[in-house]
Structure formats: C-alpha cells, structure tokens
Image (cartoon, rainbow, N blue to C red; front, side, top):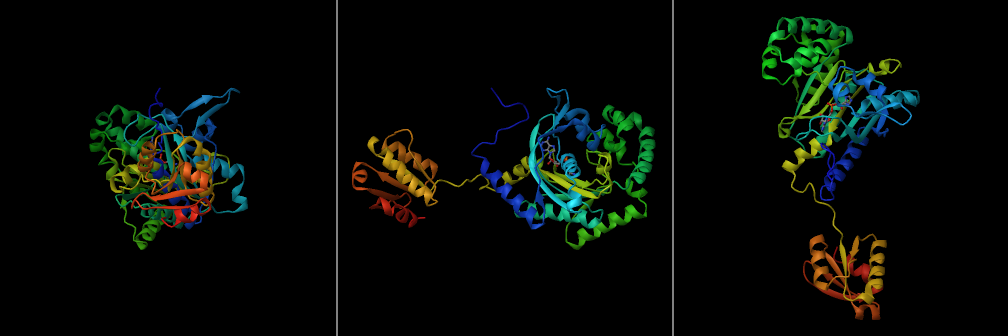
Length: 417
Ligand code: HAM
C-alpha cells in the first residue's frame, strides 16, 4: 500500500526540519505581535466558493469536496484565508479587538497534478492582518515574511509586487484587457481563450509561450490607477524602499485566487524550479462583504512549507539533524533488566534523555546501537553492578569509564555532558 498520489509522509529522519521551522514561525509571529489561530480542516463548501471565486482553478478544479452523511457539502480546506475570515466573523473577534493580527500553520488540500514542489496535501505558514485598510499593514506583513526568511537563513528569493486596484478600477481595466485579448484571440492557447470569458486577468500569468508573446503588448493595470489606488501603491513602494526591501514591480502579477484588491505580492525563488512561488499574498478587503459582513481591511500571505524546505535542503547541511538521546543503558544479563530500567528512569527524571535495550541483545549489538543512535555516554550494567547497587559510566568519545554508586549516576553522566 502506498500513500495517495501527491501526499507524503514526514519521516522521523525529516522531522527535525519541521520542528525548527515551527519554532521560527512562533518566534517571528510573536515578535510582530501575531497570535495563532487554528481552524477546522474542512468547512462548508460555500465558504471557499464565496471567498475564492467560482472561476478560479482552486474552486473549479482542485477542491476535495464531498457530501457528508447528513447530505451537506463539505470541502477539505484548499487554503486558510477563507477559514480564518469565517472564524473572525463567526466569533466577532473584531468587536473584541478591531485589529486582529493572526498566524497559522497547517495542511491544505488541492487536487493538482503533482510535481516537484506541488502536492495534493501540503502545508502553509501564513499571517492575516485584519482591521486595517492602510498601506502600512501591507508593508508589515511583507516585513514579517522577510524577517522569517532571514531567521531561517533563506536568501535566495526576490519579491514581486503589483496592485490589483479597487474593484471599479479593476473592472474598467478588465474591459480594456478583454478588448485587447479578443483582438488577439486566435493567437491564444485554448486554455487562455476559455479564461478570456470567465477570468481574463488570469490570462496574464499564462506560461504558454504563444500567450506570452501576446501578453507582452497587453495593457497593464498600472496605466488605469485612479488617485486613491495610485496613492496606496506608491506608499507601499516608498515604505518598502525606506526599509531597504528590494522588490520588482510585476504589472502582470494577478494571483490565482479572486479575492484580492490593491497590493498583491509573491516571493519567488530560482531554487524552486518550475513552481517558483515560495509565498503569495495581498490585500482582500472584500472577503468580509462576500460573507455578508461590513467591508474590513485585510491583508496577509501564505508560504508553502514544503517549498521552504526544498530551498533549505540546498543550503543547510544540518537541516535534518535531530537531537539525539544522550545515554544508552547497556545491560549484560537478563536479571539486570529491571535494575537497568530504574537507572534509565533516574536519568530521565533528571532531564537526561536515555534509552535502553528492549530486545535483550548481546553487548556488541547494544554498543552498535549506541553508536548508531549517536549517544555520547553508555551506562553499563551487569550482575556485579546490580548486586552492589552500582553502575559503570562510559564516555563513548574518549573511551574513559568510571564506576559509581547508583545514587551518583546522574552526577557521573552530567560530568561528561
Ligand atoms: P497561494 O498562492 O494559493 O495563496 O499559496 C501560497 C503558497 O502556498 C504558494 O506560494 C506555495 O508556496 C504554496 N502552495 C500552493 N499550492 C501548493 C501545492 N499544491 N503544493 C505545495 N505548495 C503549494 C494562498 O493560499 C493565499 N491564502 C495567500 C494569502 C493569505 N493571501 C492573503 N492571505
């Protein structure tokens, strides 16, 4: 039996990388005043359809949707933002504090064609800053992402930003874009021709070489900004520059989810190959309206954890180094097994990680095991030690060993730690 296509087990030999990242997520989130939120792994399908948009690939093709036994349509979450906003509205968090700084990490599900860096079950870390319409909030989440990448030692990425403007401006731009694409319709790929009617902005990030030739001459949204949209975007750029954050303006950056307006951004890395987007995000003030609430400023991003690890694998040789048990108890005869187990307990109670043989193996096999585990100290117990209440403590690096009373074993082990 195999795990389902596009999913993966995270094995004990890999888990250290995940633990390191989880520590960094907590540390950097709280450095910026963000609090963790955890939402259910599935929601009513409607939550995602309304928030993400019917004509997106995520909703149209990629959701794991199923009727539950009560006949309600449920969907495994394909992203977290919609769930977080659903929770914020449901629990009226804005009434408790009008500015909610939230973070999350968890698994997501998208029925995509699996390839390197693209899975059907994957993980994201993300933040949502809710309650502010200001460009300062856009910049804060970008600064947080930069701080996180610095904290975990990732340098190989660039930041692309764009604005999708207000709804009114985007609508006007959309009409102009459709006009332009229609004039060039026969040169477009069948996929883009289909998108032209339903989601024309998405044509802009087609990877098809023929589409790219057409798109290069397409009008860009930057030429249509009104004063308010321009001011918001200009302030974001100025604040990023003031913080020495390098970025490029990518007027064709449109994102794959329909909820954005104003600032959108992606961090891309050449270390990732075809799936070059490490994180994506932006402003999405209208999601609250989709859920029947008042328009509320909101901006955030999500970062693919598998993609983070792919980049770290290339540059961090100790990524998977896990903490090792300090002590292995080596038992020479069957009658001493209970005595060994109580010595192990004494060490653990003193906070020293300790393992002992559970398979009643030979001395040689136990020493080999200690070697494999990388324990730096062995405590050797035989008939003599058991009878006289003693233990032999051996330094595995130097080969030095001392005999001590059972009551002194913690002290003897600590001397070599
Ligand atoms: P997204 O661009 O759909 O945005 O996903 C964000 C990140 O999740 C991507 O940049 C990528 O690293 C990772 N990712 C997406 N799909 C997969 C996959 N199939 N396999 C592995 N990694 C993947 C969002 O999800 C939005 N919720 C971001 C956001 C938060 N916008 C505002 N707030």
